[in-house]
Image (cartoon, helix red, strand yellow):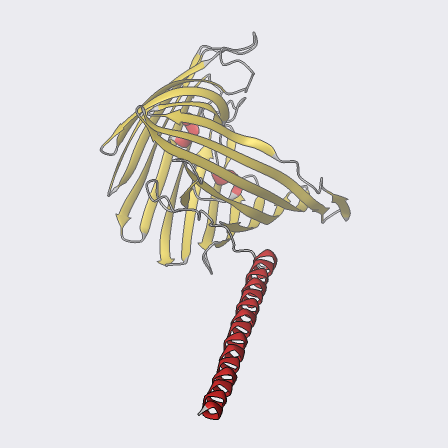
Amino acid sequence: MCLTYIGALALSNKAMSLLNWLLLEIKTMTLKALLLGSAAAMIAVSGARAADAVVAEPEAVEYVKVCDTYGSGFYYIPGTETCLSINGYARVEYIYTSTNAGSTGAFVYRARVNFDARNETDYGTLRSQIRIQGDGAGRSLTTDSGADTWGNGDANAYIDRALISIGGLQFGYSDSFFTTNHGYGWQRAANDGYYSYDQAIMLQYTYAANGFSATVGIQDSVGSTTLLGNGAENPDLYVGASYAASWGRVAASYIHDTFNDASAWKVSADLNVIEGVGIHGWYAGNNGSRFATGYVGTANDYEFGVDVSYQVSSDLNVWVGYTDADLAPSAFAVGAHWNPVPGLSVRPEAVFFDNDTNQYRLRVVRSF
């Protein structure tokens, strides 16, 4: 019996020893697992941080939004309620002129960029216009004598327009109202019209409603630094009106040349006779003023012109025109406007004057 008790006790001690060993092993394995898990987590976090440092997430970008309030081409200046349009063109042309004295040829070019910014206010639309332009000439050829001279090459850019408008009030520097109220003469490429144009520093107010507009203003066409003149120049006063409808547009302007105490007036009409056919005509009268044609210093007592255009297809327009003045030769012209692709215009023309002068011109314009 005693031996039996001793044997049972020995077995019990062995069982306890085995149990203690198992518990120790479990604790050891648990500790190792915890250590390995912690290390793995630290490695994962470190790796994630390292990856973030190498490949950063891009910041959010505020994309430009289209502004359709004022027509196509405008977008919002980011962070403002102002809509901006940027457009312009590059123009290159070759001109060949023949006279009784000989013939000449020349290459000329122009680059123009327009900035137009607008936004609405309690007083109406606030608008600013800036036009930057540069004109230059390449090689000039005198074909009869064989002379070959270079033009000025590089062109210097200058401010061709700087206007501010709010509501119907407008002030700044641009083409004069005596020009813009009627367009630029006929459709010939040269000078955008036989009577060309005049530029001035101006202040004017325009009322417009239902196709009708009326304008009154004051200008200095010489472009002195003061609107009221510099001793050699006085301000010129002008008024004008126009009306546009589906059939076309008519316009009239009157300007008083205070320096010469004289005046000039002009009337014009653009008519849509039938589909595809348009007629443009004008007449300018001069009572001792400089403004019958828009040129400062012009002495013509009268000038008139007319042209007829026909839209052959969606990308081709042809036209013929005639113009005359009392102190300038009359001229007959024929030309075309061809747009082979959007943004590109090819404009050939021929002008025949009654003084045996003929001019041929090829103008190519890439607009955007």
